[in-house]
Amino acid sequence: MSILLRAEDISISFGGIKAVSGVSLAVERGEILSIIGPNGAGKTTFFNIISGLYLPSQGRVMLKDEDVTGRPPEMLARRGLCRTFQNLQVFFGMSALENVMAGRHRHERTSALSHILGLRCVGRENARSAAEAREKLDFVGLADLAERSAGGLSYGALKRLEIARALASEPELLLLDEPAAGCNGTETAQISEIIRKIAGAGITVVLVEHDMKLVMRISDRILVLEQGRSLCLGPPSVVRGDSRVQAAYLGQHGTREAHVA
Amino acid sequence: MLNRMLRSRYLPAFLMLAAMLALPYVLPSTYYLRVASMVFVFALAAMGLNLLLGLAGQVSLGHAGFMGVGAYAVAIGPTHLGVPAIPSALAGVALSCLLAYLMGRPILKLKGYYLAVATLGCGLLISMVLTNEAQWTGGPDGMGVPRLVLFDAPVRGVQTWYYVCGVALVIGMVLAINLTFSPTGRALRAIRDSEVAARVVGIDVARQKLFVFVLSAAYAAVAGSLLAFVNGHITPDSTSGFLRSIELITMVVLGGTGAVLGPVAGAAILVILPQALTVFHDYEHMILGLVMMACMIALRQGLVPALTARFRERTA
Image (tube, rainbow over all chains, first blue to last red; front, top):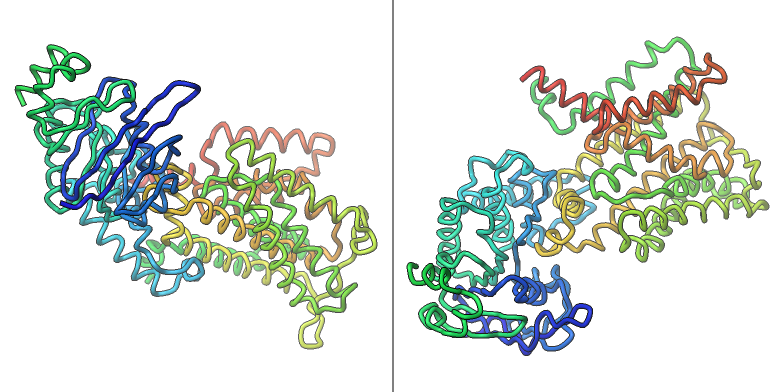
């Protein structure tokens, strides 16, 4: 197995508080890796570092054996890393289809001058992007809502729309920040199915998620964070049985949920 | 054919072209043609600003500065440098783009109020240079614009300039529509709606913002050159002043940022209404202000988007 992303000894502090301290992680190609932990454990902060939004005060991020620490997200996107957000970051003024078409940006080759002049090649490129975008919408089960304005979609649909947009950029590594947060049971089941399909298509997935059933069911490995530190890393069966994890995070209810899954 | 036109994204440009061709037969005198030319000129500048404001969600409170560059280029070129008017106009557009590029690089990183104040500074700077370099620009009193000479024949007549401005506006509109429905247009709208999401799908936000800022400066410069030709005399205040910048913003917001015809409607109101209200003498400005306030309260998204939405509701 080759390593797609390697985070080495990552630390960052905000106003004297260490949000993440000394976390290392090697993501293998093709796996589904979940990051769990109590609120404030530094999951999203860690995510923001590996996706280029924050600069770590210590440590490096290697993507495909290249040091990408502190590289802006748009450059990481060109190297095959894309992500979604915990709080929706949808382009609300655009249709669902256009949202996903925007995800095709890095594959669009025509020049800005040709865009202003409305040359034939732009029309062909638009058609290509639209076709690819429809495919992604179909992949997440939103094909029927393609022409609808994103502002009029339900919360669950918007969560899937964000995934479709990220997929449109054709990433090798997809980071999902709480893909099922705020979703009901049916929606969570849909999301879980989509994540499986994504992994089935050969895309490596790293996700932050609170829904223990979802995490235990789909993950190949789980990283547990607590107070910015890495507590435990291993397959679900190991994490489930780890007494430190039970004490720090799962608690009684969580342990039961984890075993049910 | 008609059906295809009605569904085409170029419908606003068709409507504009039809209105431009029809108006001279309806308007009773050349005075009205002059007013219409002014509407076209300001609509063109507002349309450029709308690409920045409506499409990319970035504000500029100094956009009239770029109009000033375009206007003074066609006055200074032939008067002081012996350069014919058309090359001067092109040089004005190029200079305007260069200034937008140089100023935009550092300030487009700013957001919201900060960007507004920084662009305000840019506009004031240009206006100040035009006012102070009196040996070139004639200072606050302004300067005359030599008549455009094409193939040894002077271009004259209100009607000629009416058509020139109208055609320029229709072309500007077609280009704006092209841009909106292109990969760049989607990238700009993405930046407007969520910068961070735009970045993670690989959109170079700084580059796209700079591009649209330069493009909108080019629109303003072309409009400025036309304004100079139509008026025949320009001053720093009438072309590049702070109030002009505010007027441009008002046109865009009043007309509606989300529609290509929005800036045209906004420009029409802000150019025609003061002329129409002169009968009220002292109350002119008060009524103008009230009309603007009423528009914004009743039609929050701006005239054109709000009215088309109502029209659609009724027909649906």
